Image (cartoon, rainbow, N blue to C red; front, side, top):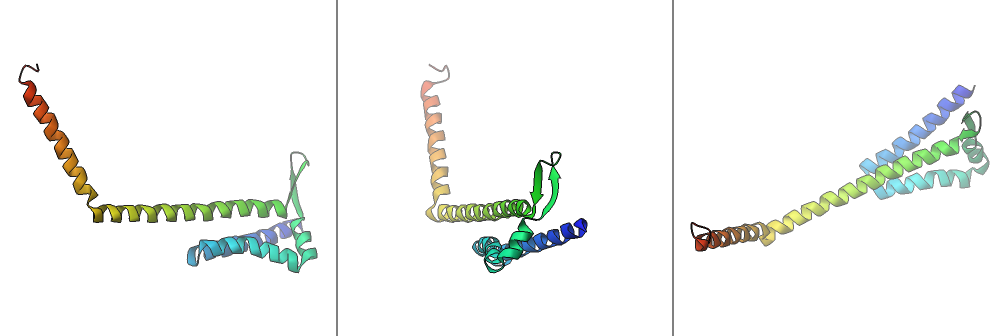
Length: 138
């Protein structure tokens, strides 16, 4: 019977994770964070007895029975993983849009042309300095 409880719990957690990831991909990362926090909180508020019983269900123990693994621990692991994914996508999106803006501003303001002119002027200064020194280098 314990294996059926474990399978049922994992199916619920996988459904929850897929829902959050679907909202992240299709709608918005902020809404995915809201779903990530609101669904378990609403479950605890609306059904306190059932949700506490579900979260405190012990699946197995590690370290010769010293460390129990409950559904609450699995939920915390799932939360931390999904929060990391959501924050990573937010950071990556911000970084890519910032790079595009910098690139567009650089091309509009003519920075590459100025950079090329400064390289040309530097190379001309070096040539002039070498020619002034003469062939002996004095």
